[in-house]
Image (cartoon, rainbow, N blue to C red):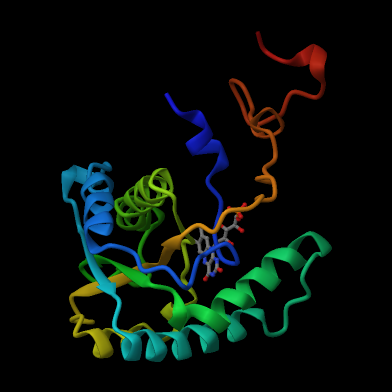
Length: 212
Ligand SMILES: Cc1cc2nc3c(=O)[nH]c(=O)nc-3n(C[C@H](O)[C@H](O)[C@H](O)COP(=O)(O)O)c2cc1C
């Protein structure tokens, strides 16, 4: 099994090649792989809108930029977040130039004031597919980032793309492009050993306590 694909796939923003088109067949093949993901009761609630039209991308880009700016306002980023913010801003500024945007939708409106169980079922039935899609893209040399910033303007984007807002929830948008060659920074993640309790919530305090 190619674990490097799992451990090395990162959000791609500055590495997206904005000059090289992405073949529709490549996107179709990746979507075909993505939809093998699990969903609650095998409902397969996903729908996709692939946006390649320049004018549509520009309009979505305007909403995305506003949503991204609103997300940032009033927040003081940690020092380790500064690089992500710079690449996030880069993506926001160049979204319209990305060859394809995949708007991922889930059939049904997200239930308002829903229990944790219903929310888990709603979002848990779509995000495994999204990650499948990102991995399938990456395996073909295509980069993407899971984004949500445009959702502040979900209704406006629904109107733009003819998505029936009352019946369908947009959950994410993936900008997709070929990856430019070049080094990628390391994936920064806390090792699972530091986050895992065994037979209870408490974390093992040291190497000597590590379960065998
Ligand atoms: C639910 C969710 C929402 C996200 N929304 C955005 C977004 O709107 N814009 C963006 O640039 N990245 C977004 N990201 C990407 C994260 O910033 C990224 O996955 C995380 O910082 C890890 O980065 P890395 O893969 O480069 O290590 C989102 C990720 C998740 C899981």
